[in-house]
Image 1 (cartoon, helix red, strand yellow):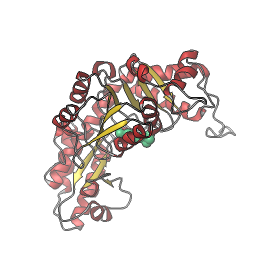
Image 2 (image 1 turned 135 degrees about the vertical axis):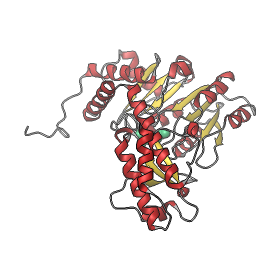
Image 3 (image 1 turned 120 degrees about the vertical axis):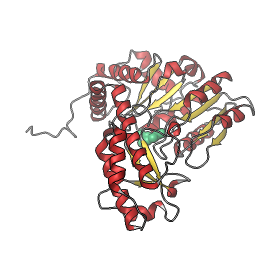
Image 4 (image 1 turned 90 degrees about the horizontal axis):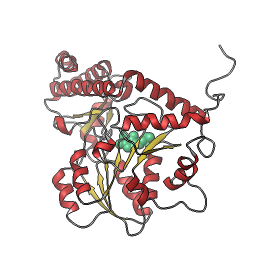
Length: 359
Ligand SMILES: *Cc1c(COP(=O)(O)O)cnc(C)c1O
């Protein structure tokens, strides 16, 4: 045992180590665009994108399917942009007809959307939204924080101008560093930095890092966080991104089959469901909190987040939980809780259906 702790005494992160991290993330995103590393959790990268693009005169269509989208609109407005929020029905993805109708209401310079939501387990129809937005010439900003690793995200094939990722969801890493990709068109729309450097200014990150040859990051980066990111990316490389995506898809199939067996239906159709979280619609006779209160000690379930939150229980199968065992354990706990509330639920059947669907 060394007489030092790896936490406070972490060795320096080598200055030449940052560019390979950005390159690895570019590979995962499927992009040749610039990738910036942001020293903060993914909401900081989202706030930086909104703060750097937002300005008076900019019109944005902001699709809201959770609080992240709501915040994004708020940051754009704070930067002076005119923002139209397009909010999906509670707990559901946005419909393409709604996007099309909103885009027909005027000229938009930017369209923002979250790909997949961990809050409610829904998947937005990203390719269709992007095609509609691109037909109007709008820039596109996509939050792929939850989806990267759970669903295919091909930034260049899809033509995403700014994609924001974080390593701590499907990729199973830590939350301390996030990243975003920036297309040449997006760079042209980013406003220049101010008098003092800002973590929220993409232009500053460009001047202080990209244009300096991508050596040491500006400021005093936390070595610990970058070692953690490097280790997470090594793991992703070892397993393979498509294997990680398949593992999430199998866990989602298992969860959906188990939920169907337990309560007779799923919250959304399969093509509207994320591979990260499966929402169980709680029976009408109870709220999510009623059911949570009856679950056995140590369970990993939570109520939905947002306007449909109390109608949903979230089975989280993201990152290391994208495996059969956590899904079976969640289903077993729910069957137990339903039984205690007088709702017949057969755990054997649910677990069997889940195991079969996992394949
Ligand atoms: C978790 C999440 C975020 C925020 O990421 P943090 O790193 O926790 O700040 C943003 N968007 C989506 C869709 C998320 O699931």
